[in-house]
Amino acid sequence: MDKKKVISDFPKSFYKGKKVFVRVDFNVPINIETDSIREDYRIRRALPTIDFLIDAGAKIILGSHLGRPKGKVVKDLSLQIVSNRLSELIDKEVLFVEDFIGGGLSKQLDDLPNGSVVMLENLRFHEAETENDPAFSIELAKLADVYINEAFGTSHRAHCSTYGMTKDFVDKISGFLVDKELSFVSKMMETPEHPFLVIIGGSKIKDKISALGNLLDRADKIIVGGGAAYTFLKAQNINIGNSIYEKEMLSWVEDVYAKYKDKIVLPIDHVISKDFNKTSQCLISDIEIPDDHMALDIGPKTIELFNSVIKGPGYIFWNGPMGVFEFDQYSSGTIHVARAVALATWRGATSVVGGGETIAAIRKAEVLESEISHMSTGGGALLEYLGGSSLPGIEILD
Image 1: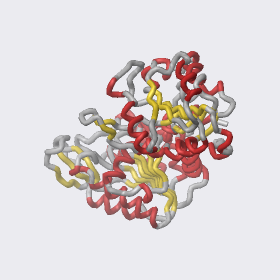
Image 2: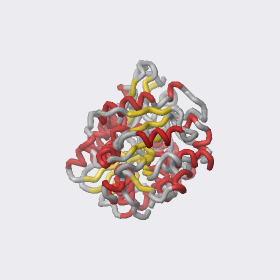
Image 3: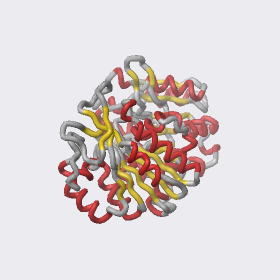
Image 4: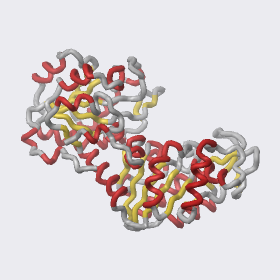
């Protein structure tokens, strides 16, 4: 992918007094019971771009989605709570706007002082947003003079705010976060340091098949854990009991394992249980799992095996947990992998972690952000890019 212009390629005087639309990805997890944000990582990652524009004297219009309201107003998916949190982070009032269609906001923006920050209500409350409706794109474009994409995680969607509205702008620029995302991921696909280690977890291979296909040749080792591992083990006629696996992927996995078995590292023991809940008794099983049990985490021998592979220097890409890490009794494998990746980073490895669950696992392992080279905010966008798909929201940038 060609290098894209970043906001610092222009002097700050360029932005002074201009209305700048910034597509951010503030799709953060909300605790409805306590009306609070469980994790504000995605908000904090956009702060360098927002601070830069405030300092430059721009009038900033932030647009984002939250959840999947499917074109309807859903109170629990309002961005008001996000606007309030952003105001605390930047120590500055953020003007929250629910009704931004029809020209009224554009006139209001003219009267705001330079350095003002406006947060629009959830863009996906409008069905036209996800349909890339030209009329809605025009309404959004009327609000601003400059367009900035700071939402790598939604750049694989050709929606109004990520794609359709940009045709009406002369200047379409990447924010600091998008620029950093592209730098790390492009390096991984083109010139990664070796040994290049890929760690794949999570429950499904199907979602990662294109990315895996592109990484298999480039990687020196590929660790497969989580539910994804049990499709590999099933394909080798190893008894996996009631463990999750993808029947439709068995043929593909058989071919991949036959070709790359010297690279692929699989679990050799498991934490198992008869039931999937927080109170069920768990046991340790060797490679074969009893018929009435399911694997919910990797076992201690596998942790030792995986740790022996996760070493610096080199390049490490990790996507997906090793088990049901949300339950404490099944979190040990994921926590050990997170700490091994952090240690490898201290030893000189470049580590890239992607996916919301993986970042949550990093938090649970008490690994600091500074102990990972880059934590990507892109889930589906990252996997699609690694799989060779173009990202509409990135391709249209200058």
